[in-house]
Length: 227
Image 1: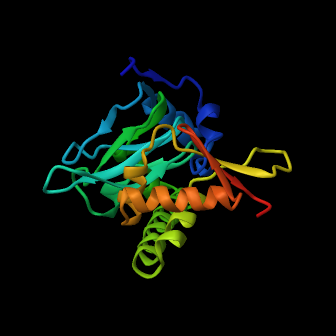
Image 2: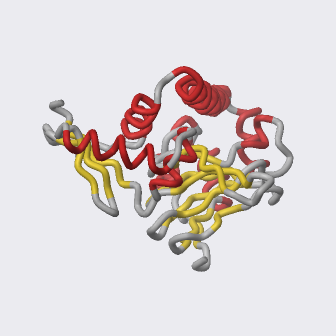
């Protein structure tokens, strides 16, 4: 981990989602308490049972969120992409971290703000509180939808859903292809996330490639949008 640095300007914070609901004096109060930390690739940001004292926002890179199973294996739950919040578990009743978050095959930059500061601002600013609650609701809805897909859909549908959920389109361009930057996420990890075997994932990906619906290599999976 590189030494963290702190924001010097409230305007830097106001440009971020959710924090734009704070008033100028509130931003000036919060900004000095917010720090930005850089981590190298394949590094734990936090582990299960770590202190749940920070609310996090991913500025750059890609993360995976997961749990350790009783047999020691990892269960990857979902990916976290730039401009997404994470680590707000204490707001949902968890005094310590219930899962781990780890960087993928590249460095990441994360903004963190103390949970105590977030809670204080939620009490003082109704718009900020509603924005945070909406954020939590979206995360819960995302988890529920993914669980429904896991329980009801066939493997091909699960894989297609996973790819679409983790795809980014080139901004400002009429892109013919969307790119999922998995940055080292293995077929086994994808299999773990969708409740399938690695062999089945490989088979379906190859079928989709033969059908000219995707292309992939070690760093990315490209979905051909026109299909």
